[in-house]
Image (cartoon, rainbow, N blue to C red):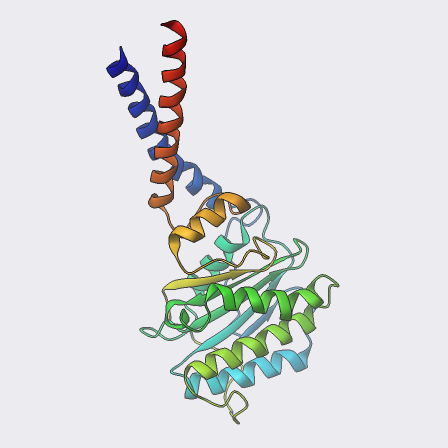
Length: 261
């Protein structure tokens, strides 16, 4: 009887382990009102709402010329949309980053700040080549201290400028380049990067400073819950969850067995 109970619990645990990643994937792939990822208009600052000033857009283009020439093709792009529907902003931002191929191929040194004004949300994605400089903690700090003071008051132009300056300084420091160096070039970018690793959010899990450890990130996701699943730890998180479920089921069945005896 005891062996049968253990077998049932093990089977249930295995089923949950395999089902958990599927539920997480479904949550992450919900396109909602944004069934397609926006195409690039070729500019470093793509404002589709009309809230970014010409001066800010020009500054972003000018600094990107410096980045591309002196920082191994690094690029920092800004996208402002009204809404991305019900889709998670971290997923949508990552898809835009990958589709536009921000940064240089092989360097993976692109950065994307995406804002959805009607959704009152934003997110920053950084390429793997900048993970040591734009860590989760650094991006959270930029979100909290550069974006939040303006974003909540709908001062989007100031939020973009403040965030971009911090990002530009961080990337230039990574390559030991003057962030204010003179530069000239086009207002348009040509992407070619890939390899997302460092992410930091604004209003989604915004105030939780995650460690760079995947295990601690996963534990933090359990308490946050707004992302609908832990993308950073993937199958590890589901396995841990499955083992916990197996243990609980065993304890419950053991208690029931004692009651019958």
